[in-house]
Length: 465
DNA sequence: GGGAATGAAAT
DNA sequence: ATTTCATTCCC
Image 1: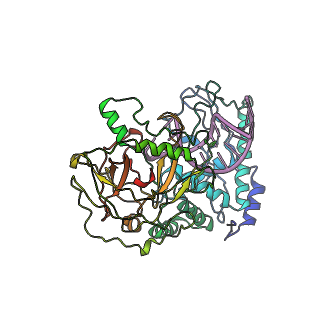
Image 2: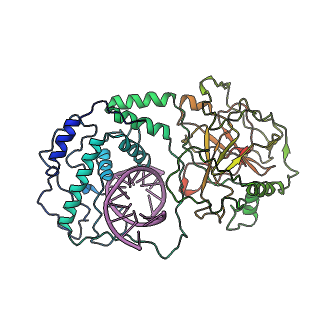
Image 3: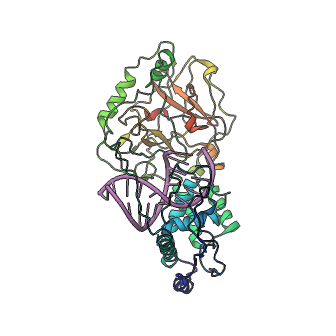
């Protein structure tokens, strides 16, 4: 989409540009770096005579760029007299954007997401207006030079660990559609309550695609292993290998699922995994029952327009908790099943694999601690085929999979849905169970709450493994 | 301390 | 070509 400018303020921008050298007029007041004062503030106090910026989309406030109010507590350990880098244009823009609360905290508080929105906004910003920030950056740079003539950027290149600790995407894609929408609205000039209202309206109809993150699935094997002999790598059941070396060099690759039509399906991984749970004997103590057929219509990137509004759940009472014993699992409707991500495809079992109900009973039932951020129709799970040992970077690589069912709550309140942990012990498969899903019965797995992901449970659609 | 954006400047 | 670090602040 071309950045279209509703209220182009070319003149303003031009004027601004001319004025720029003096704007931000760095006060002569030098900032002394007393031991207690972090030299994070090479910017100047608000310039009193900042131009009105009326027609600008995001008029910088005078002190917007001043990082003076740096959070004291959480300063990364740096030498006492560390001199921060001069900010670039985007960083200045972002700072100003945040400070001015162009996106209200009602709409978004997460700064990661905010960064995404601001980045999108930045790219759609009219050239003239971006130019203003570049000019500001130049001014800041010059001023930085003036104040710290001896300064030189010395990045610490981690030489000690060669490629050992590569960073991997650890968090799933944000709701890109929403971010994009917000950015669009912003560039269109929407502000304040008008903006909030527009976003609220959008949220009303929009089904978020991705929000949730998942832990490494708990398998029966790992469960058994950890309960008997607490091996350090109790997560290890997924140690296949196919996606080894698939480490992308960062750079958020946010798209929900199948954006990479990598022809290497990694069949070895598939088989590896299969044998992994095939060899897992069906415990005699488990009772299994057939389930209704899986869907035949794939719901993938190619069919992204699943119509949730026509999707009807019987809104009868929530599924009663399945008592120990056989239960039918029926899927009222089954959107996505076939998808591929990260280069290999996950297809549903040819034959619907019967879910089972463990005799574990209610003591093994856990519900999520509260409303969760849940994205539909996609779910994120850790890549079971990622090479590496549990916990290391590669192991944490994530994959994305559609959930077997859209959640009824997704229509009403996309952000709030309650989940429980489910597990199919007979097949060493995790199952999933949205609480309000009226037709599904599952068994529940031991909840494994990880501190780092407090409040977010591990659940995985059963077919995905 | 990671993450999320962009970009300048360093290896 | 790749990595660091500027900004912010929640998790």
